[in-house]
Amino acid sequence: MKEFFEYTLKTPIKISKDGEYVDASDVIVYAPRPRDKYKVLKLEADLNNAFLGVFPKINTMIDGVGKQSDVESNTDDQVGIGSLIIQFADGDAVGSIMYNLEQIFLAGTEDKPTITIDGIQMKKTHFDDGLHLSDLKALAGGYADHFLSLGL
Amino acid sequence: MATSLVGGQLFINDQSIAIQGNSLRMKDGSGDKVIAPQVAGTSVDVIEAVDYTTAKSMVAFDLLSTVENEALVRGWKANGLGNVIKYVASTGVTKVFQKMCMYVDPEINVSSDGVISVEFEGSQAVTA
Image (cartoon, rainbow over all chains, first blue to last red; front, side, top):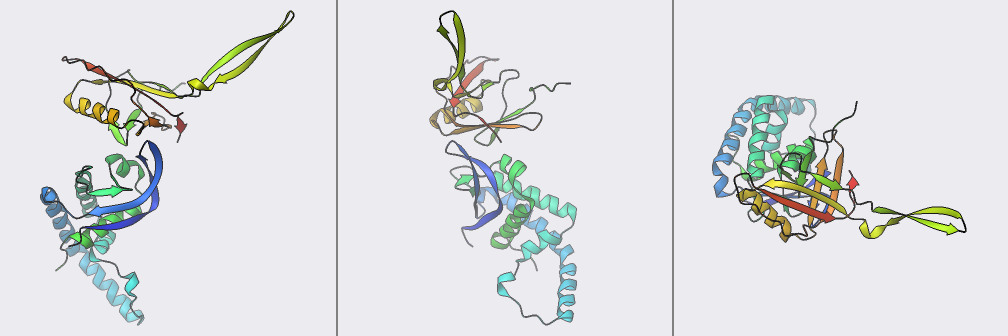
């Protein structure tokens, strides 16, 4: 498992850093820490439950695309299963997944970070007031794809 | 109808801070004005100038004396000029105070209803 993955926010957010209020966009998401294992297991269970609902939809989409054209697959456009689940899961499942993910992210501290922005552990206010929805979904998908065991 | 300033929220280094009610005071730091008369015979005119030596912002408030608040205060003091204070008014208007330093060693009143009085000074406030 990778120790972390990097992501650049599409919409930078304002953070306090070294006494200044600056725009920041460079995010590093760290692999789950042992102390967060129960939160991570809950997130993984939520994602796998959502996967069962999403799986038929994805199959239908793939069949539809396959019948309509024989477009060659482009590896750069490939999306992980975690990102697909976030994209197509029903509302209740997504709400629970995002809540659990936020709890994991917010459990980090400056010395043991879970997610940093420009080197600073992200805080609740960053999620509440700054983080754009598309970036949150991308972070959730990335977390699932890099660190969790999903699918059949 | 006027809207009271009371009810805003205070953030220090992006962390929401619970303070004692009615204790928040702040200055934007636009500087004091000096009015000086100039005299020509019996004619007196006044000029207005800004004393930029006073152009520093101030944020002061009281915290209840708790172990957690005492640790926060110690952290802010150790940061030197590295603190950012954000005040979000109940109307949504946000003031940001950058390069804020807790220049006075705060007195910690150890009692059941004790408070820690905190005062920061720093750069002029900007409205975000």
